[in-house]
Image 1 (cartoon, one colour):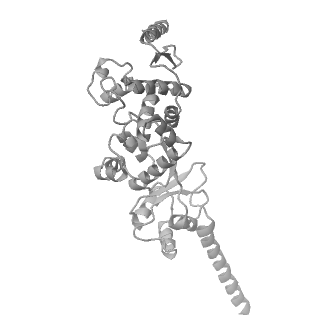
Image 2 (cartoon, rainbow, N blue to C red; image 1 turned 180 degrees about the vertical axis):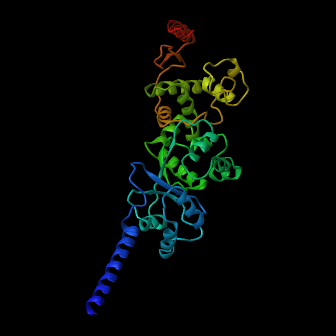
Image 3 (cartoon, one colour; image 1 turned 180 degrees about the horizontal axis):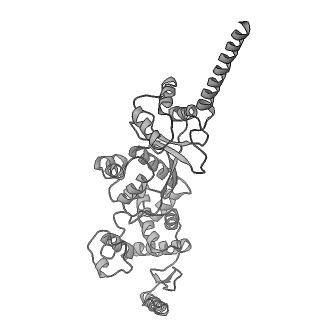
Length: 344
Protein backbone atom coordinates (compact mmCIF):
# COMPACT_ATOMS: atom_id res chain seq x y z
CA UNK A 1 0.00 0.00 0.00
CA UNK A 2 2.82 2.35 0.90
CA UNK A 3 4.51 1.67 -2.44
CA UNK A 4 1.28 2.36 -4.29
CA UNK A 5 0.78 5.55 -2.31
CA UNK A 6 4.33 6.71 -3.09
CA UNK A 7 3.80 5.91 -6.76
CA UNK A 8 0.60 7.93 -6.82
CA UNK A 9 2.36 10.88 -5.22
CA UNK A 10 5.24 10.62 -7.68
CA UNK A 11 2.86 10.42 -10.62
CA UNK A 12 0.93 13.44 -9.33
CA UNK A 13 4.15 15.39 -8.89
CA UNK A 14 5.32 14.40 -12.35
CA UNK A 15 1.98 15.52 -13.77
CA UNK A 16 2.24 18.86 -11.99
CA UNK A 17 5.79 19.32 -13.25
CA UNK A 18 4.68 18.57 -16.80
CA UNK A 19 1.75 20.95 -16.54
CA UNK A 20 3.92 23.61 -14.95
CA UNK A 21 6.59 23.20 -17.61
CA UNK A 22 3.96 23.39 -20.34
CA UNK A 23 2.45 26.57 -18.92
CA UNK A 24 5.85 28.12 -18.26
CA UNK A 25 7.00 27.48 -21.81
CA UNK A 26 3.69 28.74 -23.15
CA UNK A 27 3.68 31.91 -21.13
CA UNK A 28 7.33 32.79 -20.71
CA UNK A 29 9.43 30.85 -23.22
CA UNK A 30 7.44 29.93 -26.29
CA UNK A 31 7.60 32.41 -29.15
CA UNK A 32 4.39 33.98 -30.39
CA UNK A 33 6.04 34.72 -33.72
CA UNK A 34 8.65 32.75 -35.66
CA UNK A 35 11.82 34.50 -36.83
CA UNK A 36 11.10 35.13 -40.51
CA UNK A 37 13.66 37.89 -40.89
CA UNK A 38 10.95 40.51 -41.37
CA UNK A 39 10.16 43.23 -38.85
CA UNK A 40 6.67 43.07 -37.38
CA UNK A 41 4.93 46.13 -36.00
CA UNK A 42 1.52 46.48 -34.44
CA UNK A 43 -0.29 49.82 -34.60
CA UNK A 44 -2.96 50.39 -31.98
CA UNK A 45 -5.17 53.32 -33.01
CA UNK A 46 -6.11 56.11 -30.64
CA UNK A 47 -9.24 55.42 -28.54
CA UNK A 48 -9.19 51.67 -29.25
CA UNK A 49 -11.11 49.32 -26.99
CA UNK A 50 -9.63 46.10 -25.61
CA UNK A 51 -11.84 44.08 -27.96
CA UNK A 52 -10.53 46.04 -30.93
CA UNK A 53 -6.95 45.40 -29.84
CA UNK A 54 -7.60 41.66 -29.53
CA UNK A 55 -9.19 41.62 -32.99
CA UNK A 56 -6.24 43.55 -34.45
CA UNK A 57 -3.63 41.25 -32.88
CA UNK A 58 -5.50 38.15 -33.99
CA UNK A 59 -5.85 39.46 -37.55
CA UNK A 60 -2.08 40.05 -37.73
CA UNK A 61 -1.40 36.56 -36.44
CA UNK A 62 0.41 37.95 -33.42
CA UNK A 63 -1.68 36.04 -30.89
CA UNK A 64 -2.57 32.40 -31.60
CA UNK A 65 -4.47 31.58 -28.41
CA UNK A 66 -6.99 34.35 -27.84
CA UNK A 67 -8.39 32.82 -24.64
CA UNK A 68 -4.93 32.63 -23.08
CA UNK A 69 -4.17 36.20 -24.12
CA UNK A 70 -7.39 37.45 -22.53
CA UNK A 71 -6.73 35.65 -19.23
CA UNK A 72 -3.18 36.94 -19.03
CA UNK A 73 -4.25 40.45 -20.05
CA UNK A 74 -6.79 40.52 -17.22
CA UNK A 75 -4.26 39.14 -14.73
CA UNK A 76 -1.67 41.74 -15.79
CA UNK A 77 -4.24 44.54 -15.74
CA UNK A 78 -3.69 45.41 -19.38
CA UNK A 79 -7.28 46.29 -20.43
CA UNK A 80 -8.28 49.89 -19.91
CA UNK A 81 -10.56 52.44 -21.56
CA UNK A 82 -9.23 53.61 -23.93
CA UNK A 83 -6.30 51.32 -24.63
CA UNK A 84 -2.78 52.67 -24.92
CA UNK A 85 -2.24 53.72 -28.52
CA UNK A 86 0.98 53.58 -30.50
CA UNK A 87 3.26 51.61 -32.79
CA UNK A 88 5.17 48.72 -31.24
CA UNK A 89 7.74 46.32 -32.61
CA UNK A 90 6.99 42.67 -31.90
CA UNK A 91 10.26 40.75 -31.71
CA UNK A 92 10.63 37.12 -32.82
CA UNK A 93 10.74 34.88 -29.77
CA UNK A 94 8.63 37.27 -27.71
CA UNK A 95 6.25 35.52 -25.32
CA UNK A 96 2.65 36.41 -24.57
CA UNK A 97 3.68 37.91 -21.25
CA UNK A 98 6.38 40.01 -22.92
CA UNK A 99 3.92 41.13 -25.58
CA UNK A 100 1.45 42.34 -22.98
CA UNK A 101 4.19 44.13 -21.06
CA UNK A 102 5.25 45.88 -24.28
CA UNK A 103 1.74 46.98 -25.20
CA UNK A 104 0.88 47.96 -21.63
CA UNK A 105 3.90 50.13 -20.80
CA UNK A 106 6.80 49.39 -23.12
CA UNK A 107 8.52 51.79 -25.52
CA UNK A 108 6.96 52.77 -28.81
CA UNK A 109 8.87 52.32 -32.04
CA UNK A 110 9.17 55.78 -33.64
CA UNK A 111 8.61 56.44 -37.31
CA UNK A 112 10.77 58.64 -39.50
CA UNK A 113 8.86 61.42 -41.23
CA UNK A 114 10.70 62.64 -44.31
CA UNK A 115 9.94 66.14 -45.59
CA UNK A 116 11.76 67.35 -48.68
CA UNK A 117 10.25 68.59 -51.96
CA UNK A 118 6.53 69.18 -51.47
CA UNK A 119 5.08 72.15 -53.35
CA UNK A 120 1.68 72.59 -51.73
CA UNK A 121 0.29 72.34 -48.21
CA UNK A 122 -2.01 69.57 -49.46
CA UNK A 123 1.10 67.60 -50.41
CA UNK A 124 2.61 68.18 -46.98
CA UNK A 125 -0.54 66.82 -45.34
CA UNK A 126 -0.55 63.78 -47.64
CA UNK A 127 3.16 63.12 -47.05
CA UNK A 128 2.88 63.31 -43.26
CA UNK A 129 -0.25 61.15 -43.27
CA UNK A 130 1.81 58.44 -44.94
CA UNK A 131 3.87 58.16 -41.76
CA UNK A 132 1.56 59.11 -38.89
CA UNK A 133 -1.85 57.96 -37.66
CA UNK A 134 -3.91 61.09 -38.60
CA UNK A 135 -5.21 60.97 -42.16
CA UNK A 136 -4.40 63.67 -44.72
CA UNK A 137 -7.82 65.34 -44.41
CA UNK A 138 -7.46 65.70 -40.63
CA UNK A 139 -4.02 67.22 -41.08
CA UNK A 140 -5.14 69.48 -43.90
CA UNK A 141 -8.11 70.73 -41.87
CA UNK A 142 -5.68 71.97 -39.21
CA UNK A 143 -3.25 73.45 -41.73
CA UNK A 144 -6.03 75.43 -43.39
CA UNK A 145 -7.87 76.49 -40.24
CA UNK A 146 -7.80 80.31 -40.17
CA UNK A 147 -8.02 80.53 -36.37
CA UNK A 148 -5.19 78.06 -35.89
CA UNK A 149 -2.97 79.84 -38.41
CA UNK A 150 -3.61 83.18 -36.72
CA UNK A 151 -2.77 81.59 -33.37
CA UNK A 152 0.66 80.42 -34.55
CA UNK A 153 1.30 83.61 -36.53
CA UNK A 154 1.12 82.36 -40.12
CA UNK A 155 -1.06 82.80 -43.19
CA UNK A 156 -2.08 80.34 -45.91
CA UNK A 157 0.53 81.95 -48.18
CA UNK A 158 3.54 81.72 -45.86
CA UNK A 159 2.71 78.57 -43.85
CA UNK A 160 5.09 76.50 -45.97
CA UNK A 161 8.00 78.50 -44.55
CA UNK A 162 7.57 76.72 -41.23
CA UNK A 163 8.73 73.40 -42.68
CA UNK A 164 12.48 72.80 -42.72
CA UNK A 165 13.20 69.79 -44.97
CA UNK A 166 14.72 66.99 -42.93
CA UNK A 167 14.00 63.58 -41.46
CA UNK A 168 12.19 63.71 -38.13
CA UNK A 169 11.36 60.98 -35.63
CA UNK A 170 7.80 60.92 -34.30
CA UNK A 171 5.60 58.51 -32.47
CA UNK A 172 3.06 57.08 -34.91
CA UNK A 173 0.07 58.32 -32.89
CA UNK A 174 1.27 61.95 -32.86
CA UNK A 175 -1.70 64.31 -33.29
CA UNK A 176 -1.77 67.07 -35.94
CA UNK A 177 -1.34 69.70 -33.22
CA UNK A 178 1.63 67.84 -31.74
CA UNK A 179 3.16 67.52 -35.19
CA UNK A 180 2.89 71.26 -35.79
CA UNK A 181 4.24 72.07 -32.32
CA UNK A 182 7.33 70.06 -33.24
CA UNK A 183 7.65 71.83 -36.61
CA UNK A 184 7.49 75.21 -34.87
CA UNK A 185 10.27 74.17 -32.47
CA UNK A 186 12.41 72.82 -35.33
CA UNK A 187 11.85 76.04 -37.29
CA UNK A 188 13.02 78.17 -34.36
CA UNK A 189 16.04 75.95 -33.73
CA UNK A 190 17.01 76.16 -37.41
CA UNK A 191 16.91 79.97 -37.53
CA UNK A 192 18.73 80.29 -34.21
CA UNK A 193 21.75 78.45 -35.68
CA UNK A 194 24.63 79.73 -37.82
CA UNK A 195 23.66 83.40 -37.43
CA UNK A 196 20.80 82.88 -39.89
CA UNK A 197 18.59 85.56 -38.35
CA UNK A 198 21.42 88.10 -38.45
CA UNK A 199 22.20 87.24 -42.06
CA UNK A 200 18.56 87.66 -43.06
CA UNK A 201 18.45 91.03 -41.32
CA UNK A 202 21.55 92.20 -43.21
CA UNK A 203 19.81 91.31 -46.46
CA UNK A 204 16.78 93.33 -45.37
CA UNK A 205 14.61 90.21 -45.49
CA UNK A 206 12.49 88.37 -42.95
CA UNK A 207 13.01 84.61 -42.50
CA UNK A 208 9.78 84.07 -44.43
CA UNK A 209 11.07 86.19 -47.32
CA UNK A 210 14.40 84.35 -47.32
CA UNK A 211 12.54 81.04 -47.48
CA UNK A 212 10.34 82.32 -50.31
CA UNK A 213 13.34 83.35 -52.39
CA UNK A 214 15.06 80.07 -51.49
CA UNK A 215 12.06 78.16 -52.85
CA UNK A 216 12.61 79.88 -56.23
CA UNK A 217 16.31 79.05 -56.15
CA UNK A 218 15.33 75.47 -55.29
CA UNK A 219 13.34 75.15 -58.49
CA UNK A 220 15.89 76.93 -60.66
CA UNK A 221 18.78 74.51 -60.20
CA UNK A 222 19.60 71.07 -58.89
CA UNK A 223 23.25 72.04 -58.48
CA UNK A 224 23.96 73.00 -54.88
CA UNK A 225 27.26 74.65 -55.81
CA UNK A 226 25.40 76.99 -58.19
CA UNK A 227 22.69 78.05 -55.77
CA UNK A 228 24.63 80.96 -54.13
CA UNK A 229 25.26 82.43 -57.60
CA UNK A 230 21.59 82.21 -58.59
CA UNK A 231 20.57 83.62 -55.23
CA UNK A 232 22.96 86.52 -55.82
CA UNK A 233 21.41 87.25 -59.22
CA UNK A 234 17.91 87.36 -57.76
CA UNK A 235 19.04 89.56 -54.89
CA UNK A 236 20.63 91.91 -57.43
CA UNK A 237 17.29 92.14 -59.23
CA UNK A 238 15.47 92.90 -55.99
CA UNK A 239 18.05 95.53 -55.15
CA UNK A 240 17.55 97.49 -58.38
CA UNK A 241 13.77 97.04 -58.44
CA UNK A 242 13.80 94.67 -61.39
CA UNK A 243 11.13 92.00 -61.64
CA UNK A 244 12.42 88.56 -60.75
CA UNK A 245 10.91 87.05 -63.90
CA UNK A 246 11.42 83.58 -62.47
CA UNK A 247 10.00 80.77 -64.58
CA UNK A 248 9.24 78.57 -61.54
CA UNK A 249 6.90 81.24 -60.13
CA UNK A 250 4.88 81.34 -63.36
CA UNK A 251 4.67 77.54 -63.36
CA UNK A 252 3.51 77.60 -59.73
CA UNK A 253 0.91 80.26 -60.50
CA UNK A 254 -0.55 78.00 -63.19
CA UNK A 255 -0.10 74.86 -61.04
CA UNK A 256 1.27 73.32 -64.23
CA UNK A 257 3.94 71.26 -62.51
CA UNK A 258 4.44 68.70 -65.28
CA UNK A 259 5.28 71.19 -68.02
CA UNK A 260 8.60 70.82 -69.76
CA UNK A 261 8.59 74.29 -71.25
CA UNK A 262 7.57 77.73 -69.96
CA UNK A 263 5.51 79.75 -72.45
CA UNK A 264 3.20 82.76 -72.44
CA UNK A 265 0.55 80.41 -71.10
CA UNK A 266 2.51 80.68 -67.85
CA UNK A 267 4.23 84.07 -68.00
CA UNK A 268 1.08 86.03 -68.83
CA UNK A 269 -1.15 84.35 -66.29
CA UNK A 270 -2.39 86.92 -63.79
CA UNK A 271 -1.41 85.84 -60.31
CA UNK A 272 0.48 87.54 -57.46
CA UNK A 273 2.83 84.55 -57.65
CA UNK A 274 3.77 85.36 -61.24
CA UNK A 275 6.98 87.39 -60.95
CA UNK A 276 6.86 88.17 -64.67
CA UNK A 277 3.88 90.41 -63.95
CA UNK A 278 4.48 91.54 -60.36
CA UNK A 279 7.60 93.07 -58.83
CA UNK A 280 9.21 91.79 -55.66
CA UNK A 281 8.81 88.44 -54.02
CA UNK A 282 5.62 86.39 -54.39
CA UNK A 283 3.30 86.21 -51.35
CA UNK A 284 4.89 82.97 -50.18
CA UNK A 285 7.05 80.01 -51.18
CA UNK A 286 6.42 78.11 -54.40
CA UNK A 287 7.77 74.91 -52.83
CA UNK A 288 9.49 73.56 -49.78
CA UNK A 289 12.98 75.05 -49.80
CA UNK A 290 15.93 72.81 -48.95
CA UNK A 291 18.46 73.84 -46.33
CA UNK A 292 21.07 74.29 -49.07
CA UNK A 293 18.79 76.74 -50.89
CA UNK A 294 17.99 78.69 -47.73
CA UNK A 295 21.67 78.96 -46.86
CA UNK A 296 22.45 79.96 -50.45
CA UNK A 297 20.17 82.98 -50.06
CA UNK A 298 21.69 83.80 -46.69
CA UNK A 299 25.21 83.41 -48.10
CA UNK A 300 24.86 84.62 -51.71
CA UNK A 301 27.73 84.98 -54.12
CA UNK A 302 28.79 88.61 -54.46
CA UNK A 303 28.68 89.51 -58.15
CA UNK A 304 26.99 91.85 -60.64
CA UNK A 305 25.06 89.24 -62.59
CA UNK A 306 21.40 90.02 -63.31
CA UNK A 307 20.59 87.51 -66.01
CA UNK A 308 21.07 83.77 -66.37
CA UNK A 309 19.82 80.95 -68.56
CA UNK A 310 20.45 77.22 -68.76
CA UNK A 311 23.53 76.09 -70.67
CA UNK A 312 21.50 73.41 -72.38
CA UNK A 313 24.46 71.02 -72.41
CA UNK A 314 22.92 68.48 -70.06
CA UNK A 315 25.00 69.49 -67.04
CA UNK A 316 22.19 71.36 -65.32
CA UNK A 317 24.32 74.48 -64.95
CA UNK A 318 23.55 78.04 -66.13
CA UNK A 319 25.31 80.85 -67.97
CA UNK A 320 25.25 84.23 -66.22
CA UNK A 321 25.40 87.75 -67.60
CA UNK A 322 25.61 91.32 -66.36
CA UNK A 323 24.10 92.88 -69.50
CA UNK A 324 21.09 92.02 -71.61
CA UNK A 325 23.19 91.75 -74.78
CA UNK A 326 25.45 89.22 -73.10
CA UNK A 327 22.36 87.37 -71.92
CA UNK A 328 21.06 87.18 -75.50
CA UNK A 329 24.36 85.58 -76.56
CA UNK A 330 23.96 83.03 -73.77
CA UNK A 331 20.43 82.28 -74.94
CA UNK A 332 21.72 81.72 -78.49
CA UNK A 333 24.36 79.33 -77.16
CA UNK A 334 21.67 77.52 -75.15
CA UNK A 335 19.65 76.95 -78.33
CA UNK A 336 22.73 75.74 -80.21
CA UNK A 337 23.48 73.25 -77.45
CA UNK A 338 19.92 71.92 -77.61
CA UNK A 339 20.20 71.52 -81.39
CA UNK A 340 23.46 69.61 -81.04
CA UNK A 341 21.77 67.27 -78.59
CA UNK A 342 18.76 66.82 -80.89
CA UNK A 343 16.38 68.51 -78.45
CA UNK A 344 15.42 71.48 -80.62
